[in-house]
Amino acid sequence: QVQLVESGGGLVQAGGSLRLSCAASGRTFRNYNMGWFRQTPGKERVLVAAKRGNDIRTYYADSVKGRFTISRDNAKTTVYLQMTSLKPEDTAIYYCAAATHGSGFPPPPPAYDYWGQGTQVTVSS
Image 1 (cartoon, rainbow, N blue to C red):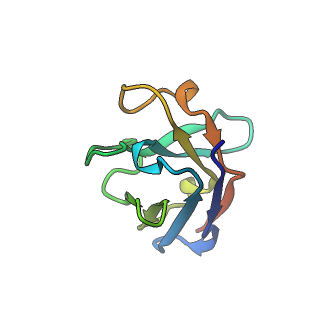
Image 2: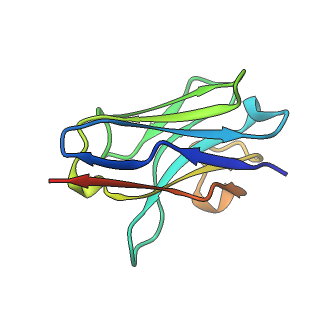
C-alpha cells in the first residue's frame, strides 16, 4: 500500500510561482513512475508532468512545457512540481499519482494505482 500526501497549493496571482510537494510512503519509491495530474470541474484528470522511476526521463504536457518542472528526492520519498509563470488556466485541483507497475512511459492514466487527495491551485488574473 502506498500513501500519497500533497501540499503546497494555494492562491497566487498570474505570473507567480508555486511548488507542490507529494510525500509518499513505500520502500520501493525509487522504482515508481510518478505523475502530477490536474482536474477542473466537469473535465477529466489530465496528466501534466511525469517522472520515471530510476531514470532521468520526464514528460510534460504541451500546456506546461517550459513553465513546470517535476523532480523527485528518492531519499525523502517526495516528488515536487515547481510551477512558474502561472496562468489563470492553470487553476485546478492537482493530484499526485504513482504507477508502481508497468514499463511504459509516461504511464497511461489507468496505470496509476495510487492517488493523493488533491490540492487546490487557484491563479487569479
